[in-house]
Length: 97
Image (cartoon, rainbow, N blue to C red; front, side, top):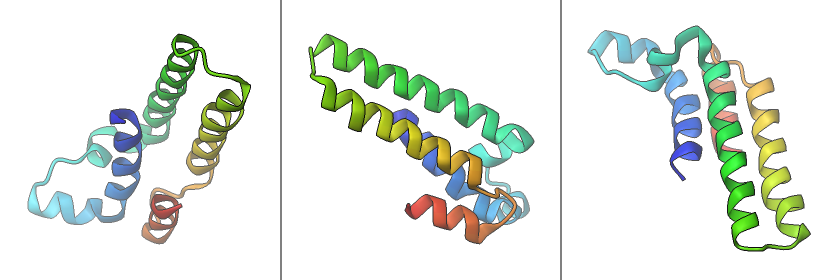
């Protein structure tokens, strides 16, 4: 849950990073800066790995891996490839998707 929250919160934070700078708010968008997509890809890979390990430990069947693990990983990959972090509307669309 923490990884998913960090990913979505960071995408959301990119919408108003200029305001964050003005008022002195420290956000993950400002912390990661130009490297945001790289960091979020790493966090996403960690999250998908954790979902996989959880499935193995719980002895879950193939549908779990097909839908929960692969589906989540593919959706996240699509979001990170297509989001324009300099465009607030793009960030908002990915945040609500």
